[in-house]
Image (cartoon, rainbow, N blue to C red; front, top):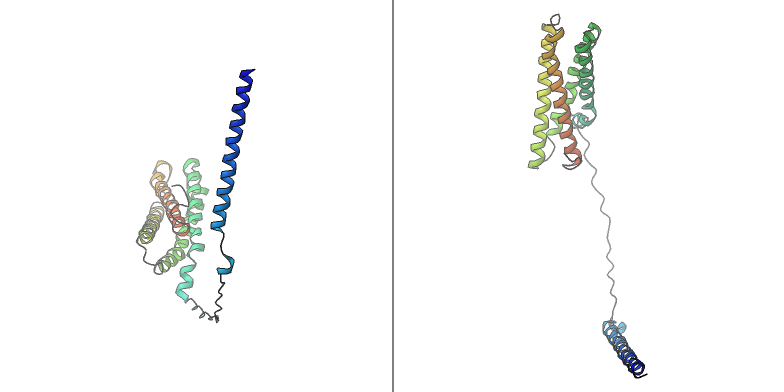
Length: 207
């Protein structure tokens, strides 16, 4: 009985303490809210109305012929990439099958590849003259340009080798010519990756 009485008193005391704490917190919250509440009579809303007359933008200058040619670079650059990739597939078939039909077809595709370099390189060199002065971008663009020029040079060497030794490029003797095409395709693929970085930013791919 005494134990129950002591327990009841303890519970009652705890309830009183909790109630007092709650009341204290409520009063403190009301006091804080009253201090934080703004005095609406002391607030004056000031609006400044400015007469803004729209300024008509000056018309953009029309691009010249060279600028138009340079801006065609993103479109025409895909042709040498496609032709060179097709050439690699054809020369792979010619190397492993030994059929002359593949070899003749490869010569025509090589000529088309060289012709497609003309608008791609020309437009790229023109476009590079108007790409700002950011040092990182210029460094990337210079590497992109040099790799592409190297691809053109390698393809020209492959063409000369093909014409000069057309009858001797059979079997293993065809391997050096095939390696030139393989290296050219790998380089132009890497150069295309650099071009993507210039257009879409450094981190558009994780490598």
